[in-house]
Image 1 (cartoon, each protein chain N blue to C red):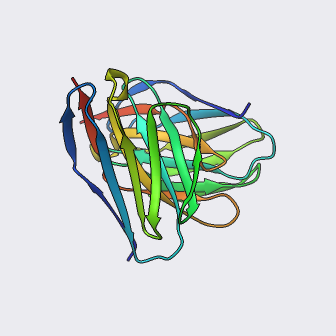
Image 2 (image 1 turned 90 degrees about the vertical axis):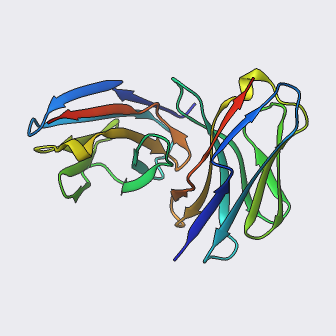
Length: 113
Length: 105
């Protein structure tokens, strides 16, 4: 089976602190991987996507960055968190060739205080 | 610019009361319209993909339909366990804000 691991489930961080969220995928090779943020009252916002190791596309300019050091590992980072970075962060992998359906991890609820 | 608008934002129904959720979209060359279900505190779960106008997909009490401008998610005789937020997406990655559905027993 193909599984997406995301951790931690909940995170409380002070403003100005660094961030590292990790996502790992099992059971598939060379998946397309995505980071989304879901803030209260807003829809799912695509932050980054990756089609392979070291290949990152950014959809929204911000103080977040992403890296893909291994085929099945996708990392979301920040050097200094802002209050506006609070939200529910979701990692997803895509499946399909003509329009992808997405399979999501369980998410990380980040509160920046 | 590709856009997705879902309505209503929230819907409360009695158990057994059928209804429909709407997803209106604007896109250049549709490469798929997707429906997801999201339970509180969890990631969205894939339900359906529709590719062309006139296409329909069914799963238990849910049926998704597609026209050139919108998609409907029809819920027939819903049960309390159907309560969730239903999300619509186009081009795989552009999501609407969702419809929060609450089914009262």
